[in-house]
Length: 200
Image (cartoon, rainbow, N blue to C red; front, side, top):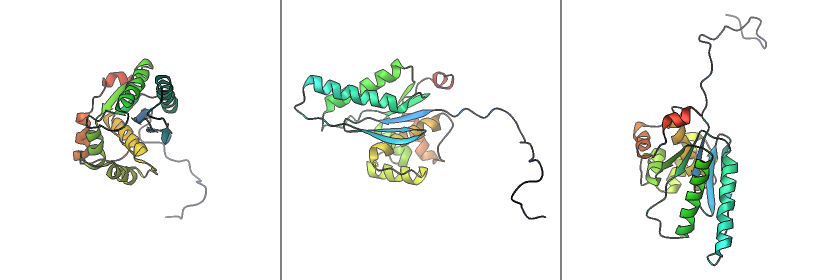
């Protein structure tokens, strides 16, 4: 057997089965927060930051929320599916009312753009990442770093990456192999009609 050369002198063999490559789905993960909304897309993860004060007027709060929503939609662009983390029913701190308004404004804009939306509860997100629905955010971030080889500076982006990964897994294109116990978390997600996604 001759040693390999820098340039091939013979034509390479034809692929065994020629045909169109499978479509790669465009999925975005969105972890909603008034101060740091995490976004994950095919291009990577990013954090949309915003600041406000408790004494802000209605007009100021509206402007802040609208600004976050506009930046989220701009960041995710055109996608086949958006997976957003569902609200935490145990949250009692912070500006709960404004955060709920932000969540609904984002969902409303996604729907207005005819982007199918999936809602993944926090416990399902944690279970998909670590196998334990009660895992804290730092454990989810460490699991995301390890499984996907991602450089993640904060838990918001880590959560968004996990949401995106779950959406791709549901569509049959997982970012990485996930244990069956972790994948069981997909059953707890409110998914859109699959045909609505695959026929976009």
